[in-house]
Image (cartoon, rainbow over all chains, first blue to last red; front, side, top):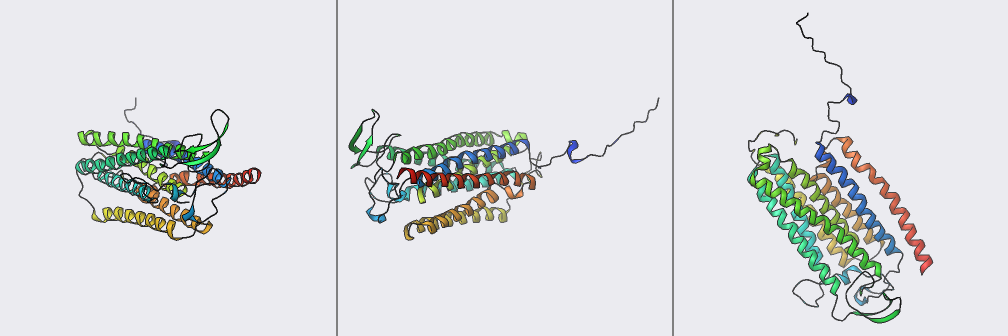
Length: 256
Length: 108
């Protein structure tokens, strides 16, 4: 019949629950572990690129005299040398340098959006999300152009001897690239180009949808009602990861 | 630091030092990329150049992960949970590079 309630406070250990060992929210934690698994997917692609590249002879002559052939691996700066609106010019790596610049800048505006979110500054979040969204869409547009040019190829083409899809050995002019043959180098060169930049572009596409979601929800005040801008932070992590991957793709595919 | 302002809707004024740091990181990333770009055309292609490219790329990756993704500010166990598994990649690189060289020997 005691009316006195005694509050028992058990001694809590680290594993007894009720604390946050990693001091991060569930969503952020899961985003980090997803990104870790994605790091493995992308590095698998890039290391496979290295292994396949090293299994082909490198081009031996002077860079300026480079001719493409399916017998040796191409020099990227002699392949990726086109820019939009200039037909047949030689501007090595200019366009892909521009794409890198655009993606890094969109990553910067994303950090600024996350920073504004920490300050609950709705106007700044909306402004920087819009810039990030524009950067992401511009990058996708550039990649679409890059792919179109890569697939259609040069006016001259290159005469190659290869096994065609009917299993016959043929010797003919090849223009552009597909998964079977390409005018730039051995078949795996184009295959890896499509798979690596394609997988990255797929991530950018999803990123652009997520950026739009964050932009829209920030603009209509969903996050302000929620009291925090954690969604912007999580999408920010994903977007920086896309930038991080591109930094590696740029080095391994376009520079080396 | 992310949790300080939760559930308070008050707008906190901009901290110029923080914003300056973000732009400084951006500048560093762009300068490193420009250096890579210039080296691609001025240096002879070879192992030394590839080594420089990979080193500069890892420096850039460090800036993106620590400054942009704030991985350095997360709790240490989370930091190591992300960084340590990357050791597996070292094995994959060694194994597949050797494999590539062997295939080269068989094929050519």
